[in-house]
Length: 351
Image 1 (cartoon, rainbow, N blue to C red):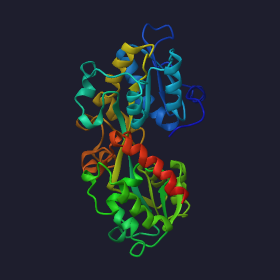
Image 2 (cartoon, rainbow, N blue to C red):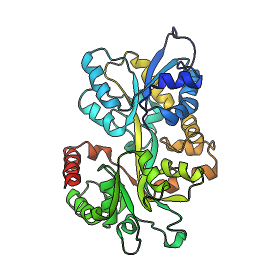
Image 3 (spheres, one colour):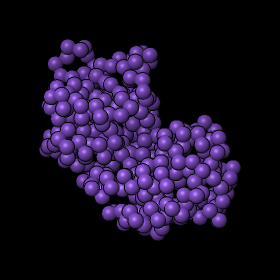
Image 4 (cartoon, helix red, strand yellow):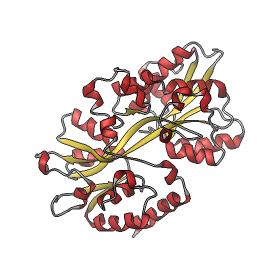
């Protein structure tokens, strides 16, 4: 989702202000950092603008393709300029462990406190959900009854012949391998790493491309270079909306999140905490999927009736879709075992 172009530049080009409300001299303001592109534009409309108006604050924005090294360097400098960062959940957890993000007091963040415990940590609050799903080409598999529906199907090259692609990254890929080997979605953690890599060795000769970006995964499917792929749901749904003969299933998807965290020593800490609470307000959260194919992190968003029933069925975090997926454990991935699995992945790919 990240873009190399600064969101400040993008905002100027699009003709809308970086300050969500009021002037730069407003008494309360924060610097919010996200990943740019259509995603940041959608959250500006759905969450940032309404939050700024309701709280009477100014929300300045920036975007970076990779926030983690800058988070570390800003805190190390002793003079951070960022307040709230929207980043992959595992970086929030690592930031907490390394003293890079603030420990949160959920008595001051009631909207977050009411969310499921697995959607938050001492240092983070889930902000939006997306899924790693099994997608396939409808030209290759036009009949839903005979199309791949599980990771076991993806691994079955005889029953489901065709070219395949997986992500060149262990997160979600190891989970898919274990589900292909018969592990139930709700019994994945702690991951059996040996078993996962053994299963990956089985499919490795049949992987045409190991993709490295969401755009690449979508392009491979769209161009017919592969017949089935693990990809992010939003990438495939975007192709389908453009008329491509592709689809996907949430069955055995891996539900993943980005989260909000606050930099240690944030210059506008009290305002940042107020914003954190507002950002996960059910109505604001319900507005997000009206503008982009990501699911709200606050389950109460589905009770607001802001999202149509038809739209609910399309979203990764909708109750009916979430219950057939595995919820990624970022706590496991940031543990020593998870870090070891990431290192082992590099060895696996080099063999």
